Image (cartoon, rainbow, N blue to C red; front, side, top):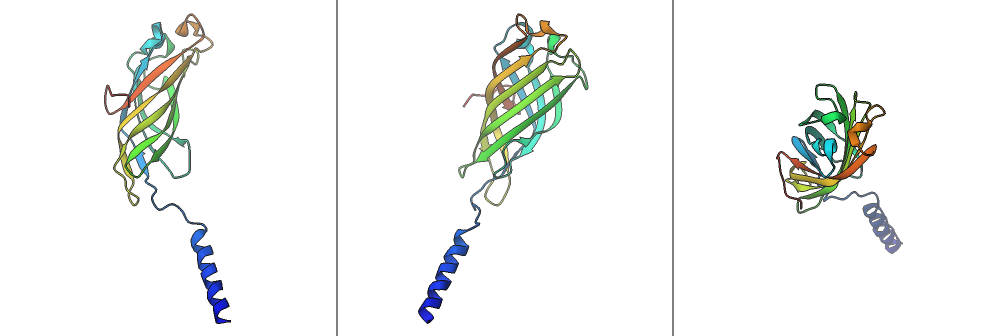
Length: 186
């Protein structure tokens, strides 16, 4: 009887320890600061849509597409596609970050700029994010040396077909650098 009781206790311990555990080596990373975007490719007005933005986002383990908290945005030159000035466009975005035990951050970033005038032009950027984090399994790290490389698409608003002549949409690549005007593609 004693041997059966010991076997039941061992089996129960294995069952309890093996179920419902969460990884203990998860590193959480947050990012903030200014990001400068260089539109690469495109012709005419579509090649002039470089901008700077400020946002923050904190990854949450197991949750993809965390919303960006965008606190600043400004085009260097909007051309006919967007109007320069306060409240002339709205911005939104999401990011998914993953940090490994060596502090390397990878993930995705989506950023959309919609004109509140100029016929509703939409600039959408989708890219892969890399960088480094100083986080540990017990502290939230801060992203540094962030770089996003990806593709952008510009769709002209209904009243602004000249924005992307000769067609109503254009696309190419972009480079987004954290706290720097230029950066190196990893």
